[in-house]
Length: 470
Image (tube, rainbow, N blue to C red; front, side, top):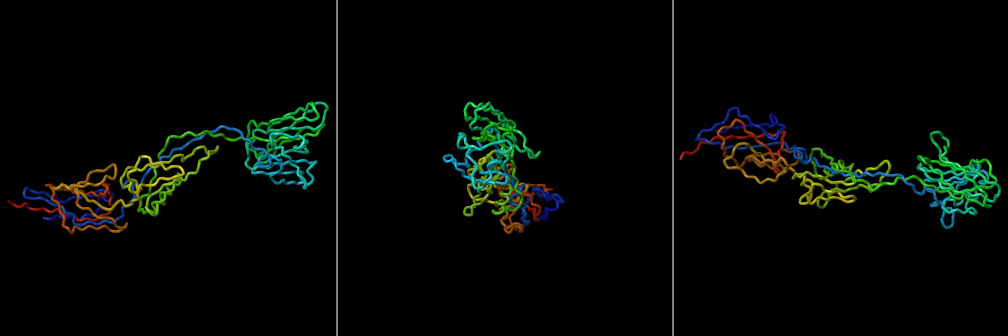
């Protein structure tokens, strides 16, 4: 007697990794009967993605180690002769821009422009007015610029809004032997909020007239410095009985001094590859999209199909507003799942954390393999008389042993084509069951991973035989 069962998996177990066949009437045998099971035919639409959560090969981690820097403020020489004057000859290295209407002379190097205003002397655009006062040594006889209240001053402008902390100055008077004279000098910054100059520091220099010529020095300090685009130095004493000159003008700017950095505790970030059908080209493309923030780039060698992950992070330079090197150290964390490792071409070199070196790369051991389903294995919970044996690799951490195998079906067809099986060999398996009310069939791939087939048509038979009498 033959019992035929025609099953459409979509009806009851569409989203399960099994299908249950509920018999309308139980099948039973007596001592003179036995049963065999036969899978007559099977068909399903091949819509199983080769990368998916079902196959457990769609997620990996990036183990990211950051490095955090701290800083203190220090100073470095900012305003000096470098770039403006030749040290040996004191000759200008930059062009001098003279405006006889405004009585100014300007020189520019990099982001810094120095302006000298003198209403009395800057009247001829064929002359040169600047002298090399931008060095630490002074020469009152040859390198000097006159300063007179309201008639002469020095101004410098920085396009980077530098923070000037110290202004080093030397002032020189020519021949005068009278009573001591006090000279008031002020260092100012231009406040863009008020559109006015605001004082930074001021001093009173006393020329004691110990000799015909005399030099006084002073360092102006910006005790609570802020970024400023324009500074000015001028004399505020109304009148002087001698000519006053500046012979040194140098400045420090505030700079952050960073420590060596502290390596932070690593954090793992999960990367999820969208479920889908992948070939080498779009596999590489989606990896690059997912790894953008880590500045990692995936490529596939055209000759050996090995996957390469390159670390494209530039050398990190800390700044006040950027103190964390987010990608100081990057490691791939690939699950120890067989088809995941095959996808990436990882064989004997597998390790929990795979470093991707800075300014270098990681390359797989062998070619990538994106074929995760070349067979569908259909098993049953019926108890075979002759147990089937399988020696299948373990593809995941929830591996479980197969039941009895009814069919081993080739699926290496293009996506969205129909996979068909017909039992031309008339394979039947004797079973020990004496009473059957429900039959469960399960589906696996060749890596022991359960498959959820959301569509399948199959024809199963249970055949009852009479035992031959002796």
